[in-house]
Image (cartoon, rainbow, N blue to C red; front, side, top):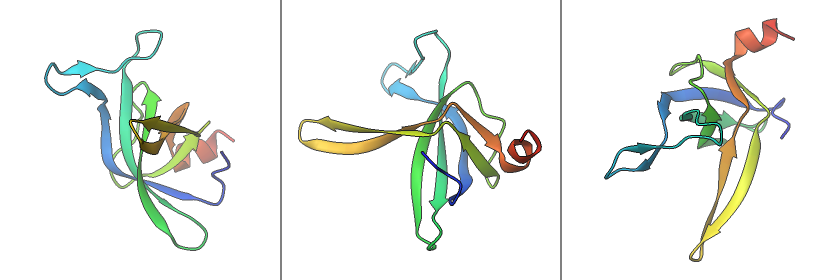
Amino acid sequence: MDTSKLAITCVKAPRPRVLNKDTGEIKTDKNGNTVYEVTVSVEDEFGRIELVKIGTTGEPPISAGDAVHAVGLLGYVWEIAGRWGISYRAAALLPQQEAAASV
């Protein structure tokens, strides 16, 4: 997904994704690493803003208010029992200044 024209800002600090609220089971990837969930605002070039949650493996070095660079961002369409949505996953979520320095 091309994110070059998007302004992504962390609005809620990363936290482990909980699969089952009753048992407290935390989501892990196929290698057993904890999957973190980050709530971000995404603003496009026309000023439209949406809040989305992005999943990533490992705790990202970002906090609320940070401008974020989403590395390898993918969107997956899902449907369950007539409901549908889009889940987002990134290879990494980095502070914008750190991502700019590594380019």
